[in-house]
Image (cartoon, rainbow, N blue to C red; front, side):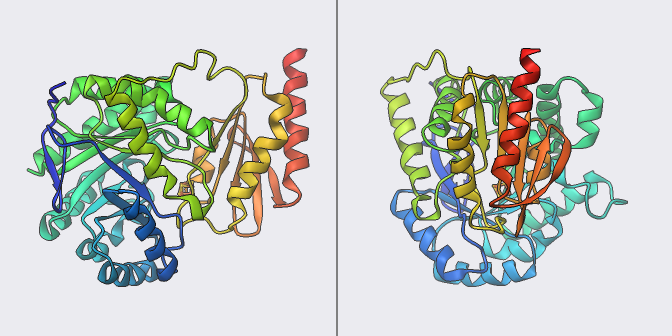
Length: 374
Ligand code: SF4
């Protein structure tokens, strides 16, 4: 299948056009734990990671990143969420910068988004960085949500397309776009729609918060198997909730899925998506309590009695993206340093200590099941 996307470069790595689909992952260690982060980078590289993303949220993270850069030759991507003003000081140490269009409005509220993006582009041009416009289902820019109220897919696609046009006007073409959702069907729709709009722009493909094994891989396969054979997807990430020691499995799975698709081995899971859906984030440097992965596993085990019920439960690792990413779930928990906040859709039910939250979650799930029967 001939791809129409243009080829961009992340240092020496080509993405798009006839370049092989590259595989990436993200460190789940604390960025300031330099030794642990370097160890995880090495294990991801060993499995064949083409690009490795690191979260940076403050100046101490940047200092750590500087040292990490000194000690590894891996291609590094920095993930900036609300703290996009850090771009200027991280750019010299990375090959690519991801910004989230849905998080640009939080800081420097009086500066127009166009001006903030122009500033980011200028930094990328100065330091030879590639950019990723990373749109996420749980943090779509409010202006687009308002304009396309009731049509979430359209809001995601329009936000991505708007940013592409802006980068084009700024004469910057070394960028990719991602349109991620936790629902593989929405990932397929969003990426097909975007690809029709902008067949020239390389796509970073992923199902966000795909969760624990084996469901996380199944959800990812559902999306990738429908998109990659159409030539949609130039670089991929399989986002799995895994203990830190097993993080490099994301790369193993990514390579396996690509191989299976190339050899036309597709998994058919006709009933998948029916019944209880547990979504959980893959964790990153922003996790403030290492018990997050254990909690995700416990939630899955505890709720197994309800697996026939069509509800979504979200388990998120931090307070940066957790509150937004749990809004659409029937029940959600997001993890802070010592407590876990339990939510029903966008409404907060309360904060509980890690060992106290499961019984309350069960109670809420029982209420939901009972209310469905009425
Ligand atoms: S929800 Fe938070 S901890 Fe989880 S991957 Fe996203 S930013 Fe990282």
